[in-house]
Figure 1 (cartoon, one colour):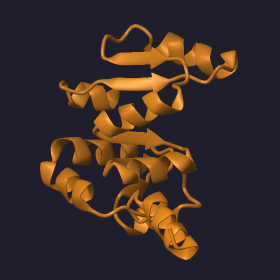
Figure 2: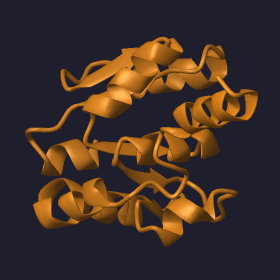
Figure 3: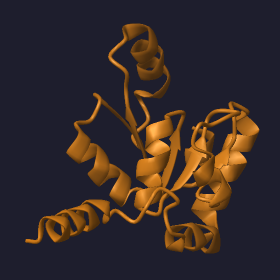
Length: 146
């Protein structure tokens, strides 16, 4: 909510966990804000489209750090340690832990400073370029003499 208060042109999409112990408090806290869209978990294709079209990802998910970097998106990682240090080292992700002030300040830096955002968007993904399957196919065909 603090991020939204400081960025009036920003909205949030928050897919909710099915567990009511997680879901209900978030619905109670965030459900009445017109710029917060609470949703059921997204199927994978819609999930990728949302990442492609968003500006910033805030997550504690390791896999999401990889997917967001493939689209050149900034990621704030709500952890103090990640098993994906490549994104941190590449400057595409920032470990912010659970400190609200740090989360808000880093989100504001990325949302309000176009140079920071552009630098990340232009950075190559440390997890590959998305063309591995084409290279594997070509190598397999060459190996088979086809």
